[in-house]
Length: 185
Image (cartoon, rainbow, N blue to C red; front, side):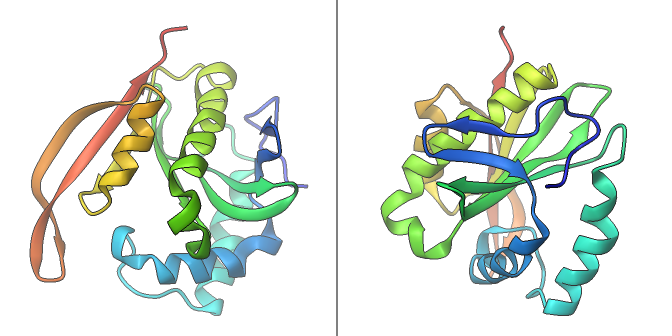
């Protein structure tokens, strides 16, 4: 198993669910989901096997040994089986905050979107607030999936900002909605 040098605890669990440092074996499933869900990601073209291999070897592989990596990526598991992935990205170590990234298996979205987002946010919050003692975590989302806001708000995230017509999507400018949570512990 990969281990992040910056973390004392590598695995965060709740019931049958856990997040573990991103596994190389999950790279092709992650590529498939990212390509299927490209519409809501900051990804400008479909990933290829070659680009995914390059990313895992040259970007992800180097994160584990860094004192202050710019992202911490995790495989999201149910009973040890991959069902999603995400992490803390765009980490700002000086201001003690990070953006939350997460996607689930496309086939699970219709039935489990809300529940898996809530579980994942609870786990990533443990990592961010307890392990790293970050001050703030936030979700930056294209205004395309309002059901995401319901999941975030269900566990205390607050709608902090709407960036009007901030991103171009299918030849139209759309809003970006930011939800955040501050560490009050």
